[in-house]
Image 1 (cartoon, rainbow, N blue to C red):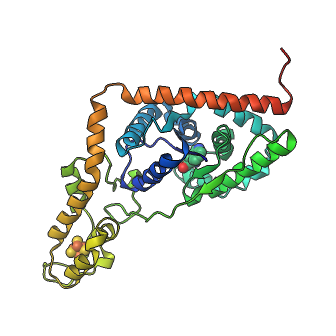
Image 2 (image 1 turned 135 degrees about the vertical axis):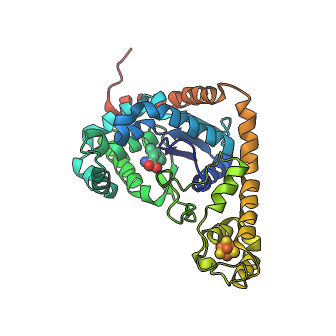
Length: 328
Ligand code: TRP
Ligand code: SF4
């Protein structure tokens, strides 16, 4: 099975991204995987901050490698290094009805949401965002696409585009499946969704002391003043984390909190240690490749070469299907 997925370049990744990457790593162990940084997609909303995308891309790929994505097993690359994505997008744009793009649920929502923050997204490129995504997937003739649930309408559009192409010209493309895994919702230290824009995240690259500081900043049960006061773990962010990362000790921790037998300081210390154990191998791998200057760029150059070869073969099949193969 061929698997493909992409991420918009968001720079340093946080704990919430770890699930997604762990899923990618499971897939890379068994399938032919392509993972890429969607830098052109970033331009569709951040066209006024284009230059920042370069560092964001580098930092994100550095985190992929630190987490353990393996460039020997998976093809890791940057979208804009493979011009065939854009070429196929152009071909698709010729026969994709505008109505298909206008009815994608995220389209009008995002125009409104980002419009409120002063960003005008009534652009050609933004309307075409899911069509570019379809080209990303189909240029590698991928069978399966691990994505978040919010992306399913984009996968559905991709299937429709594949069907339409196959019907108009010749059967070149598979109809890819979305692979949705349910991931626990990880709150940020303030209890809101973990996000860079809230500044409430714990970065995968955080040093142990920083993890300790972030855990100390977590919102706990406000009714607990003394450590002997009975606690309400259900309102506590620390406890939500224990529920994800400290499963074997969860019942014991919960009982100690309710019975006023553990203080929040001690409870947080346990969590910080658990998170640091989780991040230690990530730090170790990061140290290894930081000792090799230019490593990230090398990985991306090799990945782009492999991706381009595959993408060029698909474009040949596309030309053939269009009836545009010139006789030599
Ligand atoms: N739209 C995806 C997101 O916001 C990123 C993306 C771009 C993608 N192209 C893709 C995901 C192709 C999967 C396949 O998360
Ligand atoms: Fe939260 Fe732990 Fe304090 Fe209970 S003891 S309120 S679970 S930090």
